[in-house]
Image (tube, rainbow, N blue to C red; front, side, top):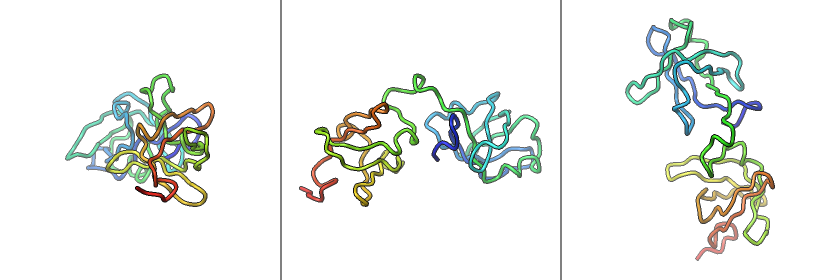
Length: 176
């Protein structure tokens, strides 16, 4: 999910209450799940943080994440959180690994060939089984571009540009 408002990112989706002790089943939607730990304050809401709660406990159960929150000790307490997003403050760019980008940073950037020829604009970053793909709007056509070297030569956030070296046929329908 894109950033709902400046500074907050959706990192998980609260599916439903689990049991009667105030736990919720959460689908984690972040590359940094280690940030969701006891003691951290998270925002919870449908589109943006609407309320803030402190994580009490995090555990795995049959491959699912189960979270409980300080002060919410029963199923009735956590039922209102059902079908909500879990938000954390965005990490500072300096704290991110090199060549790591948030989806909202890439959306809207212009894609150009190495020689500067325009290719289109990034719509989103899709996470599929084989890896990340840029969804690029190229003159009304959707093109999926592997978000990997050597196709992605450089991302320049300051210039709002993604420089690509696409293989023949990816944009021009002239496959080998």
